[in-house]
View 1 (cartoon, rainbow, N blue to C red):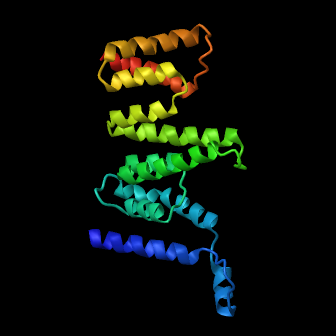
View 2 (cartoon, rainbow, N blue to C red):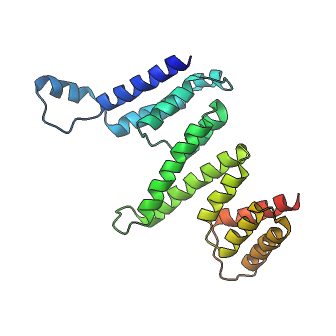
View 3 (cartoon, rainbow, N blue to C red):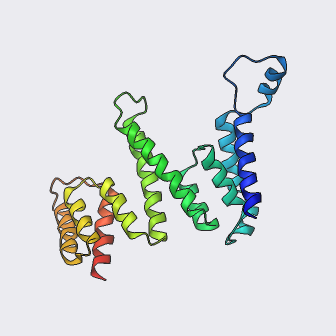
Length: 214
């Protein structure tokens, strides 16, 4: 029931926070407890392993299932789960909107780090992870037929001005001029003109050109 699910998520939240290492001075009893707790990374790895267990497939397709509780619990305590895993749980166990919310939050964090000159993380690493998260969001939006969300994501993500213009035209249902721009993008890239798109953006041109033709 909804009550049991809500109760479990509250218990998951409390248990997770209790299991994390303490940052304040501890007495002997607390120190003994501290030695038996797990680090945040260990808890995260354990949760990822649990979500990969084969027995959970028995509930695939159920309207309410254990995986939904686990993912919502993870979202409550801000556990960082791999983007492909969030896509998998959405497609298998219906965690669509929780997965999308977690991916959007992660995309905002990565975007902020990418533009932060003081960040210690290498830019190529951030760029790769950001692309992975964006690819995952794009896949979920496509599966849900959330066309406006998908196009909006690409307007933020695209590096070529012509791509952004074509996407805006398509959002306004001006398919013929949008299709011509997508074709022009592909032609210019093939001719070697200095557009320098990512592989994903080049694939987008072909996909959107086909959709505009339908």
